[in-house]
Image (tube, rainbow, N blue to C red; front, side, top):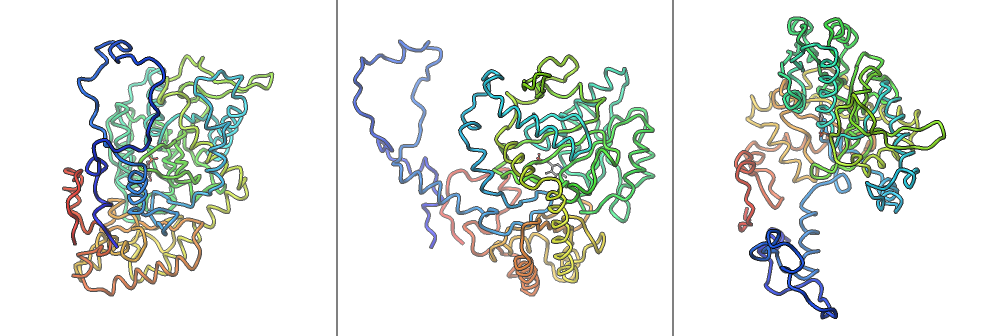
Length: 487
Ligand SMILES: *Cc1c(COP(=O)(O)O)cnc(C)c1O
């Protein structure tokens, strides 16, 4: 049963004078605000906040939360974003008083336990990356990219080298060229070849003395391991440039290979993808970076260090550092969850995570490839990119139609239309924690959907509160006041 209550805003539900709590009458002398605060700090009128009873507020947010899909409620094969199971134990540990009640400005001697945890986290990420110097500070993968590029800029500046370009393949995530631009570089696109890998001739033509960094995602956004990675690293280094590894796809290679070993100078981790951090409406997040020793001095301050007497402290005395990229230490709560995940599995367990992620993806690929051709490869890493372009050509059914119809069947949609190099892309990532039954059921539903009529699919989803929205208009002119939603 659906009612419009769900869709009204708190402001529309507001009734003057309604309250969640009734305060006892004041038993100390009252003073007007003007006496307590400078008048320049006072608003002309109180803010028009909604007035509601507690039950109204709880129902409002609970109902809203149920309009969403989540990994706790549904299979969520969102390729490139890795919506993997978030162990509830990590949530419990991250909310222990010794972690949540710490004030970010507490003196180091009073938070030795937390500093020890963060110090170990730096060391574990260094080990997984094969890159010795780590900053836990960036607040997302994208900010990690930007931070690493600022580190690269500081490195070249100090060497007196004028390098203004950052290269990235056409299959790259949009954050790569965006980070390059924000860090002050010119973003240059390198072509992919027919197999979806870096076109080495195009890379060779674009690499020059002005190239600072080549950013590569490996495994690639097509879910394949770049076979020429060693040669690419050699070419980049021969040009005096640095190789950046976008670590969003570390799920496929944990404990199997390390970016530092295949030539990367810098990388970021996405703890919310690889180490089971919850994804939450864009934040709070973390995007630690790992770099080679020669780049270490430029990392943001502070880093956690351990002194000879065994005490931990935040080291701010780092003259070559690019400075802070985030307030206080970073997103410690997310880092604690990632720490728990890594410590729970240990080295052999992490390798198994990747092996199972790759096995699950290949199993699903095998079930689906006759329905949805996979242009690049019969085998994949932790995810694969199928294409609905044949369905589109023959029956007018798009990747979006399929994605939307999946919602009616109780599945979150896969990533669609990314990477841009595959037409009508459906990027599917099952993750290591899904069972064979879940994958079988998902494949069965996808085949069922393909058997439906194009008209049926164009209107999907049919059972959600909002049906097919005009995506461009929804993004540009979101309806913030609830209309009567009707089908
Ligand atoms: C998710 C992703 C990013 C950005 O990471 P955030 O943590 O979401 O900022 C960058 N590159 C690739 C390939 C990604 O999948």
